[in-house]
Image 1 (tube, rainbow, N blue to C red):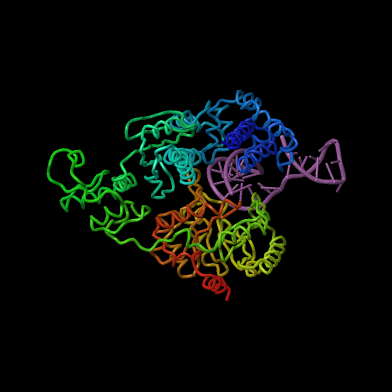
Image 2 (image 1 turned 180 degrees about the horizontal axis):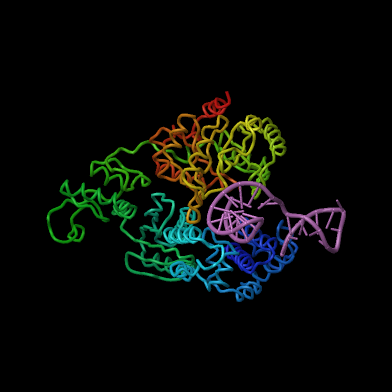
Length: 581
DNA sequence: GCCGTTTTCGGCCCGACTGTTTTCAGTCG
């Protein structure tokens, strides 16, 4: 396994410690940058052992960082970090994770209120210790308290985008174990929820003992929580819990259904079975003979058990896609047609290295073309997103020319000149109308002022939706899962206005965002709003994030007709142009 | 800490927002 992730964390921690200690901001930034470069570096940095020159040839990594990377490759640690870490209490770094708490505040908490951990912070809030600090009013303390509650509420579930690759990689490894016939993931992961509590795997194997052995002795396992004949449970690094259940192939469908849930969906199905004089459990759907004990233990043959489809059919119900097996969905409703990754033919929100992407314009277009798309929109950041190297009006004009040129040059795909233009706090857009009118597509997104109240957020977003030159509202709430709540506008009002003004709402497929979220999508779909599913790609591999957006869309019952990325080129281009006439 | 070259030091993004203040400090992107 690559050392990049661990190494990246080390540099991030160095930056955090320096931050709390009040070091030079540029030095802190440089360390953060190195951390990011390492995290995103495509190959294992361990390959640079002894090659300082190679390391420093990477932009952003200088002599000092190269030395520390080499030290880490050699010894597995960075001495400077060990030294730095001894200067401050360990728990302070956690405090930096609290939204709204920065290094200055954390330092003051430490030195003036003896707060050195999240627990201490909670105590300090309740015993009023913080109120005696200058410049700390009730509002501020209340905000911190809310942030803490938010962290606690969402902190122990991992994001879909973390869980799914872990599950897939583990399945791939375990399928190599001799005797293993199949493994699938179930649970909330299969339902595509935005966060996952633990990962459930179901396996069929001719040699369950060997599979269990391989599972519990995997390289990332830090604790075995359970190890039995049919179920093993382990904890991996980073607090991930994984359950492996070994079952008979003949009962695979029943087990998959049972462990996919949701609990509410299972209850509904079981009640239905009872009414029909049957019993449903994880081993199958059985005729209920009124006898004691489980039907399978008494040798009763199931009516259905091998596949999910068999069981739904036996219950006289339509098969339900896992994404729709939530409390708010009825098992009796035939599922609507749902959008699929294969249906997506256009990416309408992507960045190049003109702003904060890593792809050149050409690389972006080629990447989109290789995915079989008929359209790619180039939507770099606007000027107010200074952090993201947003384009000044002059740079945007030149960028538009470059995009038109490449559109003429590269055949087989339409390249749209666009912008991801900031929706400023008061609802104004970041470029004037004359410039916006020159663009083929305008994605308007909120990036700053993401804590403003609901009323302001609503009028802010309404202003963008109603703007005649805006096509799509990008990541409408600006939330970051487990990290930032984002805006809470009046969604029904937004969707109503979006329908009226023919403006499209985005599902940002980045698993950190998934914004709109599933519940919003469902509402938007019901209200007749058109939806875009965009990856917001900054790197070539970001195009693969599409599947998270698709899962979210499907949970919101979005079909291909209402998803503009699934439209034909003719229909899409005609709609885009229509907003300009 | 990194970079660039008008090169071995000086510059590195900075405006918007919030909560607190009464002119500003801290956080965020």
